[in-house]
Amino acid sequence: METPALLLHLFGRGITVSPLPDGNLLVKPAARLTDTDRDAIRAHKPALVDLLQRRSPTTAPGALPAEIRALIGLDDAEIERIGRYIEQARRHGFGLDDAEALADRLLLRDRLGADVRMCIECRHLERSGRCAAARSGRVVGAGRELQPVRAELHRCAGFAER
Image 1 (tube, rainbow, N blue to C red):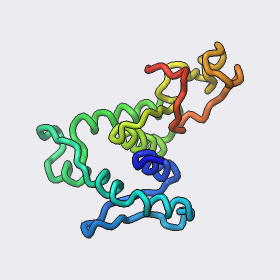
Image 2 (image 1 turned 90 degrees about the vertical axis):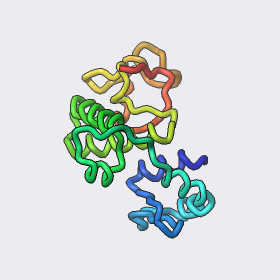
Image 3 (image 1 turned 45 degrees about the vertical axis):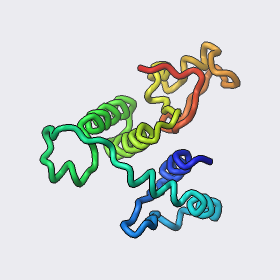
């Protein structure tokens, strides 16, 4: 597993990984880690530290005061993107807390450049929760009545941007 994929895997399971000033990593909650997770983190530690310490380029200050912007570590484009992701999740029936968590996962995906999507981002997701691409036979191996997990990051041949 490559380092960005490992980070997405851990984040998807509710595990956060943060770099510490001394070059170590803070992993929370440690109780959720499996032995396989621990081995993978050890094997990828230098790359994880490097990836997590990279900063996105910032743009000129927007509506948020500089001291707040410094705390959240987001530039204007990322703030706007998170807002869109939250709105998208809310339109699909997610509560505010869940929508914010999904937006965080999507932003991490964007930062890592991972080639994965959530069904809530796809125009084929119907109001019924079923997948129109599967219904029309465009998703190989999927049943016509596929009701996908809307908030799971995955690759899909039937994906179409909204």
